[in-house]
Image (tube, rainbow, N blue to C red; front, side, top):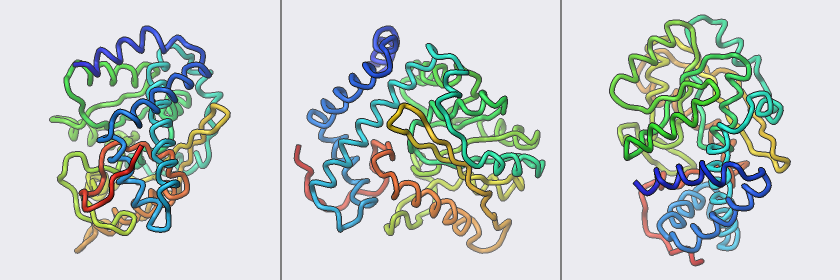
Length: 293
């Protein structure tokens, strides 16, 4: 329950701080996590080792881990700040690139599955859809306890988004949305359900979620990769990539389709590793040296 009470406390206090002061508080929080939570520090380091590659030295790895934690803390601040912001002000902070790729996919008439990764400021950038009067259902990881899940979902939906946790009954909602020609948003860089396919991600096999691909193959929905990046000036860039050419059927089609999505995710994450804010291990842990403080 402590996480729920932490969200409630910050929502009543830190959320009212000016942005610069709020981000300064986030940086301090990230520093404390780096120093006092070796489990989180090592999980991020484990992920960064794969992204940066063997050529990265210990100093570069430490910088990347600190930057990831700082961006993650800023994202939490963005989330609790959402109810206190006007949608117009949020829209003014978001620069959209490739919106025509989404429009073209919608015009196919079979619905659109947006696939993305935990990169940038996910919750802030998602407000681009209500700002453009586009109905989107987003799937998110379920949290415990339920009271925390409900609170976080309410924060994410406060400006008109429709986020739902991946749990019983959500597939029916997704299918209905796609049949109506609507848009569904699915994060594809971490298999929290541990029921995906083992595929290569940054050159090493791990379990990857393939639900988005399976649904697209079943419904004919277009699959459009979308990513967002945090800019130093407090703004956000959102990039809609061209639709993936989904193979409808055949041996290995699911894996081949997912590999196309992985390729695009890798390109963004490799270019902006400090913005890949996954705080849990994506790969099974092997032998590794500990990252010192």
